[in-house]
Image 1 (cartoon, helix red, strand yellow):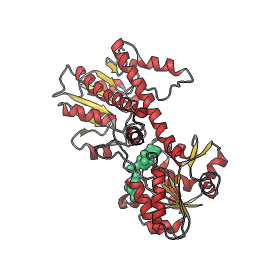
Image 2 (image 1 turned 90 degrees about the horizontal axis):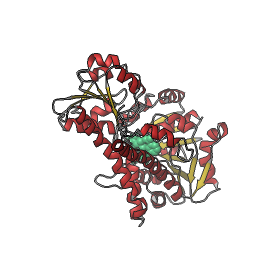
Image 3 (image 1 turned 60 degrees about the horizontal axis):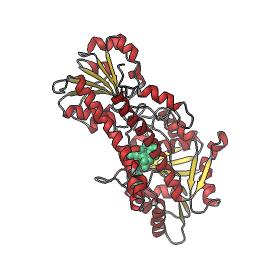
Image 4 (image 1 turned 90 degrees about the vertical axis):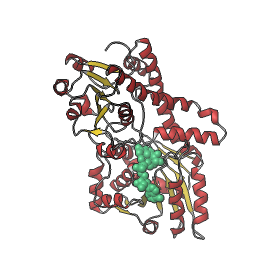
Length: 443
Ligand code: NAD
């Protein structure tokens, strides 16, 4: 099949490359010329394991191409995926849907025949219906552009495997069982033939809500364990043992019960805020008001980490050096949007500490966002002269860091584990004091 993908960010580039890998002919479209130039050269403009190989292979095979030209895109296919950003509006909780609206408003008048516009971005419920109105108002006479919602569930760091072997495919549309559904199913047919997964066909509003509810649930689960973690600290209990124990109940499950610095990134924080805002617009303010607490528990962990670091420095951060290991919001990603790691580094710096940040993949993005912080080119370099070493993102390379080697370069002997991921025993054996969030017991 021929298809386009509007928006070539984390979602769109992965979708475009993977669709080509499945045998489709794909045209990726973006307004960012520089990004499109890199993609044309077969280069992924961000870090995502496994994606560069697929993209290069498909660019070389000519199955995926890239453009900034909407007319070319309208001409190329009758199936158009939309994966542009829906960030938080400045100064508000609500999502900014202007980018998805822009795509439809610009594409619709260029369509020469009937087309299917498949939204993949995460949007407030009701957006697809509004996009259908925009499409109807802008198409040429006699042309029908049908809006479908097909939310994306990929995780950065696992984007390729999540795209090629999804847990489920959700398709929201106005008329289930018709030709439009067949077109969307056609795009996923190679996946469904190779390794079938459930396909949930529903209305537009339900499809939109599935995605925001899933993210709200995940955020709530993380904040739940982090709230318990606060009690553990006060009571002298160990949240990691507790999480293992409650996670053994299959009704609860261990995943997403990692106590620590909490969630960040370009999705969960803005998605729960947008969900609250949209529920309010719909007159259901109370229904999602608990998400405010979820958000607040999450942000409190960052402050708690700064308090722990202050304590570790004897009550005063001025003049102290803190190695911050990690800048990405999670490992295996270079995404620093709303990153707890960088947020903590920034707060430490504002309070007078010299925060020296290292990340295996996110240094360029971190430098662009926080140019005033100090950066190092390796974990060991970041630890040179550090009074405290703080692990803020659980990259595998930090877990494998040799405490003896760090002892050779650091000034202090305090390890703060913001992700409850470090091998405490080996650090203690090397003479380090190990402190972590949610572990009030001496560890
Ligand atoms: P991103 O910021 O990495 O990419 C968005 C891209 O859209 C940018 O390249 C931008 O230039 C482009 N764009 C903006 N306006 C455009 C226009 N009018 N025409 C063409 N391109 C345009 O964002 P992302 O992380 O890929 O997220 C995109 C959407 O997918 C969001 O709604 C997000 O919530 C959702 N989502 C993201 C993930 C993820 O892990 N990143 C997972 C699931 C869903």
